[in-house]
Picture 1 (tube, protein in one colour):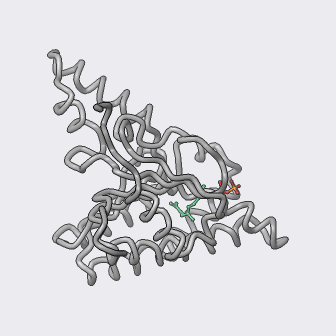
Picture 2: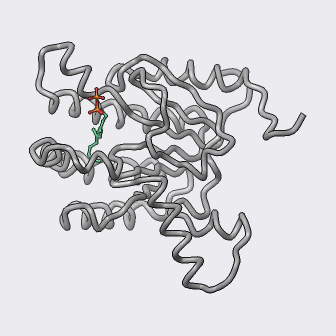
Length: 228
Ligand code: FPP
């Protein structure tokens, strides 16, 4: 990249693992494994590009209604890859955070998440935020209910701080791979003024080069935040 605007926070909706596998006559699980490998490669590349926060939408609340067999495969993949990659991120001084409803996840997966977060907490290079069991509406509703329990009206800033992403900058750029043109209950409040980038490329094929193309598109956008 040249000296043009680099988004501080990039969020990625990683879609297309299943179709990637289908195209190759492979089981969906093979697509998820390829997706997991790409996720790891990308989580290194984004910080080399100067991005400070990267949020990856790994599993939505709605994805949790997929067949149990597919979910078990995803959790098995997570158990296999997550601990060693948390170590790798720690070595690279990247903080790992997981957002979403942990009550919806298996207890041992939650324990691994907590270990990974504790291990990487002191990193200073960037923040990798994984959305697992995450839903934008659920995030907003939980914050509304928290505000109601406090019994007072809240400002926009106070409300933002009550979301699971509290303390993070809003995403500057939201990328969706895999051809669909929708947000699918991702960071609904936080993405109010994000630039959107959609690509037909299926997530396992979303190379570092493809990511750079999204950064180039971002650099050419004029952000006005509703002003003239
Ligand atoms: C989207 O492809 C991918 C997912 C829903 C899962 C991706 C997550 C991982 C590989 C990480 C794994 C584990 C955990 C527990 C976070 P898709 O299956 O929707 O693809 P399709 O639209 O082509 O069917």
